[in-house]
Image 1 (cartoon, rainbow over the protein chains, first blue to last red):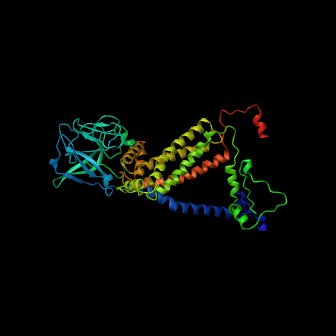
Image 2: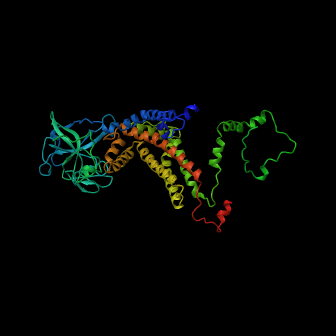
Length: 223
Length: 268
């Protein structure tokens, strides 16, 4: 061994300052073994960490099928006041998955949004746009009122007082087989323009729609 | 004859056993052996682990003059955590994270039916508030005594992480009884989280496991509450304590050397 070392000639090995290296070696065996052990450990750890992280993040990227739920015949819904109906937002979890929706017929005298195939009936979500508490419609004052922090909305769902940052969310409506059907949710800005659904507390006026991006998997329906 | 010597208990004079008379020998036989059995068992472990050195290093530290009751807030917080950990583990024996009524029913069962269930749940429920109050007091003590300064900054940073994790515990635990109050409070909490620009909406989807509250949301909160965060808390409390033992505690800020050069003399 020592013979060989003393006879070492290669500039290459010497330059790299690798005492004990064989002639012409560029990586010592110790270094090679260390690297291999680290790489093996890294691969073994990644093999359980990466799938777990993906598993936890998975639902964020899951496609949600738009669902339509019948709520009653068209004559149930007057044009001057709301009728509360209970729809199921999430299947299979009982009461927790249900939510009240306020529905009335489109009324040209108060509704400013243009008529199209999805708004023959106006269906408003009870989710307060401040922080998500359930609002109720008070017929006497024609206002939606939130019990948590005092948000107030008028009959079209626009904010008239309190902390909410945008009008109440709407649901698409349509008529099928003599039944009014309530479909997916969409959010609106203060001009009642349609946007892909956002969580409460996220304003949509100005740069709001860019500061609070929508989920890539849930979009408003094409118009 | 065990090698490990326990310190003599500080008994009052009348109770101290008299010293052995010269010439008497050590007693032998089964009774003497049984008397020594406990210390022999500890000795057996210590001979194979040298743990007594670590225990001495941790427990028998020099502390500065002026150490007072405020210095117990850290230990108090740790015992609040231990109480939460133990009661939480036992609550998990009965709790069912089921959104379709099972969660609420299981909590009702714990409170009304299980022997001592109301007590154990009450300990956990009120203990959470106690822990947060103690954490805040402990942080205040550290701040006002200047105990966060060099070389203890890292311990302050770990402490802040522990504070945030404690809040996470409070937030995730609040949903678990799954009554109206906890459900709507969590809705509000998640939506506050969602107001963070750019990342807020994505964080919300991660917390809820989707756009709406589902069965996965409760399961997720439960898993964070009883697995992920307690594990992190335990590890970080270990690091926190190690650094306390390593750096020692600080003297209170009002304590000055009595005379110039006092400190030097004490060191000598």
